Length: 159
Image (tube, rainbow, N blue to C red):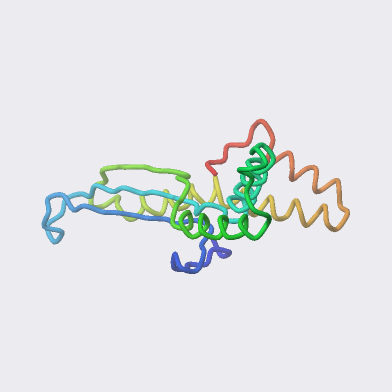
């Protein structure tokens, strides 16, 4: 996963990977196992939300009676700005798992989970990026082959 860069949630990450571990029993120095909850979230795409809000506001303006019509674009921009600030903290759940692991298998189980996320999610993003680069370079054969891998019926992605 050399292309993974760890950032804080303030730096607009592509995914948020959260792991919560509970020692069993509660004294972690004497733990014989661990209960682990792992969530993978994706922040809402503010570009998509902004576009959706603008479309909804324009649609509302078109359908409103003239006396109740919304003001022109300045009001739309203000409403979108307010809504974006409210929605910025929301995330879309990509994956969630809970497991009980013994002390000896704990580290390898976490690495296995991270590797599966790399294989079933980040690899899709890498292939999709290569696909668009191929199309941009007018290499339609490579682009089409990558498109089939990314969006084909046998694709087994989790995000």
